[in-house]
Amino acid sequence: MKAREALLARLRAQKLDPVPLPPLSGDWIRFADPQERFRVALGEAAGKVVSVGIGSSLAEVVAGLDPMRGAVCCSFAAMLPGNREPPREPHAYHDVDVVIAPAQFGVAENGAVWIDGAAVPVRAALFLAQHLVLLLPQGEIVDNMHQAYERIGAKVAESAFGCFMSGPSKTADIEQSLVVGAHGPRSLTIVEY
Image (tube, rainbow, N blue to C red; front, side, top):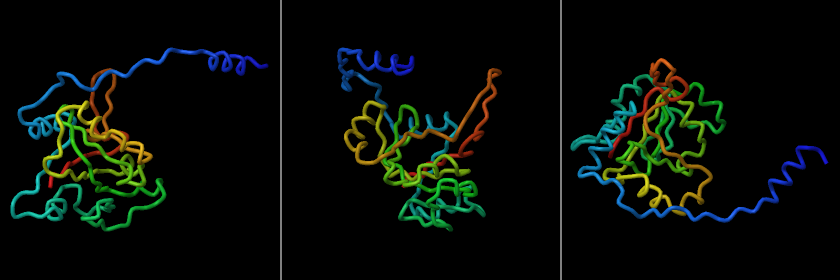
């Protein structure tokens, strides 16, 4: 038996006592105005929130966003068509400027939104497009991540993928220089409708 197989066999033979998961109930953070806290937290993560106001339509608000001007746009949101069909091949998103996708809910604590993989069948689209526009239904904001995980619950097993997103991609170096959009979307806009 080779050393690798012997090591793996010893690891498999180890029996660890199960450890119970921590409870999700507790005195977790709550906000007097979760919607306002969500806006602040997303701004701290270099994202932006835009609301559809009275007398405006969702399509008008999205069309008026800066990244939309002259953009190659793909939409996974049934209510807003893009000017191009979403490619089925992940690598084909290299020339897509904007991806529009639905978000299920937001988290006030950190400005993140939950995106279910069933709503975005090509997950690479969320990471390869230059700009993301995520559509968030009005009032769909929970206070904290504990509530978010309760809300996701068993539904997460129904789709092969889901993720929380908070702001565009960011990276920083040892000199504390923050670069936004270095290795993923350069902007993230949440449109509350």
